[in-house]
Image (cartoon, rainbow, N blue to C red; front, side, top):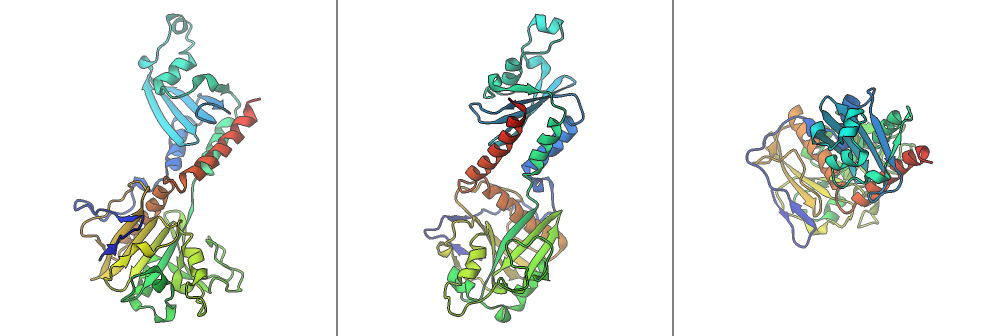
Length: 355
């Protein structure tokens, strides 16, 4: 199974001979989910201090601090994300006078012990009882619970995006239809109440009559299947299909045979993860190509990159797709948008409490 890079911005991921096909592990948790868990376990419901900054050299900030035994712990929330920090109390400078009066260290000394980059002078201590819940709510609003992945079908002899977008579902191979069943259940779109990922559920069939959907590990996933989207005989580019798959960060390309796919034919700026799958034995062979700027993510793909049709293999495959999309959020295409969203959320909290 191969892909041709050419002048494409995509590159195939390297496989790891020591990697294994495994089920879901901790890396499925989003960073904001880990922050929520850490805040709940270490701060929430316990006496601790919350500091806010509406404006600083690092933008708006929300910092929670607690003394846990002989360890100071801090959760620093900024537009770049959240950082969990710890420092031993003995490492924080404190004058003899403050130690005698049990006043604790000065804020500047405490923050510099955590990190030299924290602008302590911009921080305001806020004692509002409701703030802890507001900070939790802010993080929870950033947890992504639904994903949309594209699925394109590449028949034998096809090697380009344009060719695979022109395929009809009625002529698709049994292997492709079996793969769709591996991904999820085929659902009728008319009246669908779950996550719809932009598909028409009114009954007018503007985006076809059926979709493929699954609820996995507490997340909803809708697959934009190219062959289930409307086919227009007069449109060689099949723009209606490309409108959906072209806006998906992750696209699965199912290949009937081992034809080298031309990565340079992928024209979407939104696509960042391409997962090429073809049948092999009783399972599938898998190649993952990522756009430049997407950082490394787990789980690692084993060598040979072959997985079965069992539940563990399905977990591994979906885990790879979900974490691939999350890694894409850190690329230059998406990171500025996410920072702007965090800035708005932090400013909302800070402006409410700092007058």
